[in-house]
Each structure stands twice: as structure tokens, then as C-alpha cells.
Length: 139
Image (cartoon, rainbow, N blue to C red; front, side, top):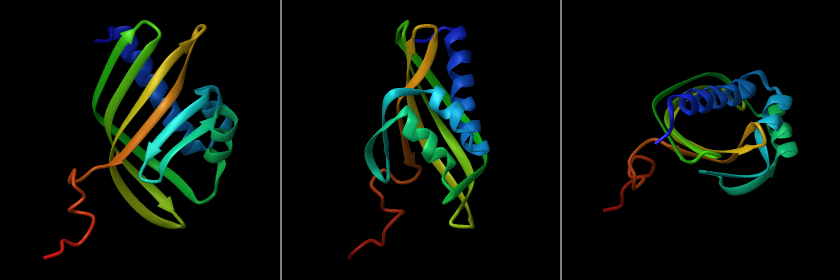
């Protein structure tokens, strides 16, 4: 269980990260990312560096216009590790077309010195856990 202070701090950091994606600010994304971080989602599993995440944030293939978190859960198993999970509704433009996406995300934050950095982020598109709502069922 996390303290109220860590809850507020980690939620604010997660929002700052998302805000950096909206403004396409590589400096903020770089500062908030561990030297090496794992990202897991529909695209697969990858390892990124704090430098490469800055480049990804600036890319032109997508634009985050708005996001909204709900059902936020935070735990801190040690004073230097915090895990946040939440539901997110995203309003994006992908390849120039509008897209609304609902997903369940999580991030693992680690304290390095006096600062927190994100060491892992996951995103799972919301829906049926077996993917039945994403593909036609065979008879």
C-alpha cells in the first residue's frame, strides 16, 4: 500500500508523462524515463532508452489530443518503488484520422536519488480478455 504522499507524487508524474506526449516534449519524457525501460503493449515487448523515448514522443505518425484516467490504483512495495495502474480513455489522431481508445495501463516507477523515473509501462486495449470482441468467431 502506498502513502498518500506517494500516491499524489506518482499520479502527478504519470500525468506529466502523458502531458509530454500531448505536447510532444522530448525533454520531459527523457527526464521521466529510466536509462533503460521496458514497454509492453499490443505492438509487443521492447526496451527503450531515455534518449530513444524522447525521439518516439516527437514522431509524427500520431497525436494525443486528450486523455482521462480513472480507477487509479497505486502500491509501493518499497520506499523506492511504486506501481500505478489505471484505466485511460485516449483521444488521438493516428495517420491523420481520429481515434478513441480505452485501455488499461500500468507503470513501474523507481526512485533514483531524489527523482522518480519510469522503468516499465504497459498498455492493454480494454475489452474481452480472450479477444473475442476483436476478431470474428469461427463456428
